[in-house]
Amino acid sequence: MEPAQQLRTRTTPIPGLLLFELPVHGDDRGWFKENWHRKKMADLGLPDFGPVQNNISFNAARGTTRGIHAEPWDKFISLASGRIFGAWVDLREGPTFGTLFCAELTAKDAIYVPRGVGNAFQTLEDDTAYTYLVNDHWSAEAQKDYTFLNLADEEVAVPWPISLDKAVVSPQDRSHQGLSEVEPMKRRRTLVLGADGQLGNALRTSFAGDQTVEFAGREQFDITSEASYAATDWRKYSTIINAAAFTAVDAAETADGRAAAWRINATAVAVLARTAVEHSLTLVHISSDYVFDGTADVHREDEDPSPLGVYGQSKAAGDVAVATVPRHYIVRTSWVVGEGRNFVRTMAALAARGVSPSVVDDQWGRLTFATDIAAGIRHVLETKAPYGTYNLSNSGERQSWADIAREVYRLCGADPGLVQTVSTSEYFRPGTAPRPQSSVLDLSGIRASGFDPPAAAQRLADYVAALKP
Figure 1 (tube, helix red, strand yellow):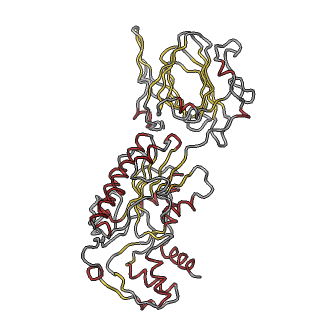
Figure 2 (cartoon, rainbow, N blue to C red):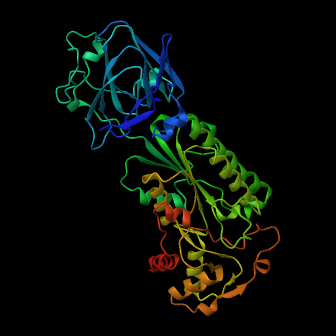
Figure 3 (tube, rainbow, N blue to C red):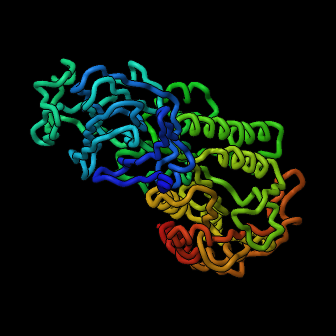
């Protein structure tokens, strides 16, 4: 008995270009194959590229030659009949620009061609048909983003089995430019939303000099506005980092604030999630310790949400929406400190004036400096960490707000004894947002990804030192 055929794949010299050998089952009636199997192929390294259109190209004569076209989408190609010689050239910006890979394909073969890799075929038999899935809809507008290379380029030197002077080639394909004149296809970009806040400014610093990252404040992209989505060409992007949020936790308990919190933190985030799914984007979203009620001493990523107030409820709803995106990172933080108004700056200003503040001593957590959130986000994206939720705060022993206030006073050269302690119930007036008692986040997940958050104590010392005139 003939052994069962196995689906196989192999890599090529062009990053992301994957060649598949498909099991073909045949008898005297013909043959059958699973042309595309999402799960089996994903297990072998095929990206979950989300095809939206299926095309068939029929070629009547042997020697028909098409290409070399680099398209602004990914495609998965296989043969329905006949035999072809395929040539692929990396036309993306980067160190492998100009790399050539060639292979002969029959009905038992398929190939995944990532965006920006030039694609060309020459039929070796009459009546050859190949089929391909693509993850964006073709349009005349999209064709403007193609990159072309001449079939006869001498630098790449494709070894065509049938010489081009005897092949069937369109006038357009004969007229394309050579490799030295090709402008490499640029990588897809990352769009940072909410780029004018504490985290947004930290992300600007972290990605400084990276031309593939764009930053948009509310004036450039309002996440609650349909017009912002409609005006954006999502084909140009691979990733959204959402740093936009309604964070006024006490204002969220008012009638106007409640509506704003849900509009920004939940409804708009659901639209972002739908956009990410529709365009096969990676979505990075910032979550909060406020999605928990604080009864657990330490909060794990897999803990069920149990928010106490409107802000936490709206953030938890946004998290649920983001979790539906196949490529998502939910980065959960606590007690954020960055540029602009924050607790540490307030305490430093009071210390400079010799004020004796009353500070809560029965809420526990760790500070999270915006620079380290930005570094963590960059880490999971660049290392392609497994998608999912990651807790991210600075490391070290848990502290109360009063502990931190005393340390700020000490670092400022003021008397830590000036800080008076008060309970949560005594400090907050009725109508303000309830706070989780414990905001301590378990960091084992982000550490397992290879990112070890710096100690909060050292970050606090550096931050306060930078505030001094």
